[in-house]
Amino acid sequence: MLTACDIMTTEVITVKKDTSIQELARILYDNHINGVPVVDVKGAVIGIICESDLIRKDKKLHIPTVVAVFDAVFYLENPKKFEKEIQRFNATTVSDLYTKDVVSVNEKTPVDEIATLMTEKKTYTIPVMDGKRIVGIIGKADLIRTLVS
Image 1 (tube, rainbow, N blue to C red):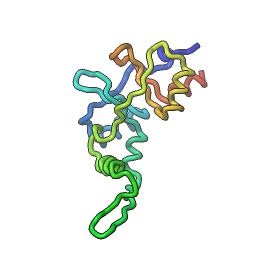
Image 2 (image 1 turned 90 degrees about the vertical axis):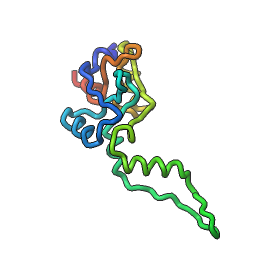
Image 3 (image 1 turned 180 degrees about the vertical axis):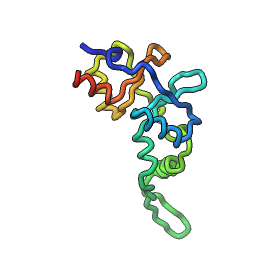
Image 4 (image 1 turned 45 degrees about the horizontal axis):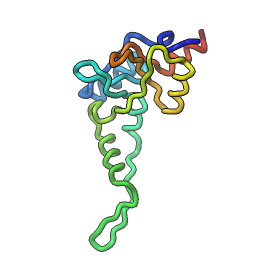
C-alpha cells in the first residue's frame, strides 16, 4: 500500500505571513501548484494558503441585510462574518487570507486516508510532517499521479 512518503513532493515551497498576495499568486502560477504552507521565522508551519483562498478574495462582497427601527440598526446576519469578508476583500498579504487550522499527515499515512482527508476537510494541499518539521507536501496532482502510475 502506498503511503505519503511514496507520493509526496520533497522540495517544499513555503511563504511567510508578510508575503504579498501578488507574490503568492506568482509563486503558485510559476510552479504549477495549488497551495503552499505558511511558515514562521523559524520555519514552523503555521498555516496553509491555496488558490481557492485567492479566488475567494475576489468574489462579490455580500452586504448583510439590516433593519432600521427609529435610530437603531439590527443586523439580520452575523456582523462578524461581514467583518471577515471585508478583511478578505482588502487582503494584501498572506496573513489576511491563510488558513490557520492545518491538516497534516506523517510519512506513513496511507494514500487512501490522505484522499479521505482531502475530500472530507476540503483541503487539497497537505503538509507531510516529521514531528514539527515539514518533510514534504501532497497536493491533488500527487494523488492523481498514483492513478497514472
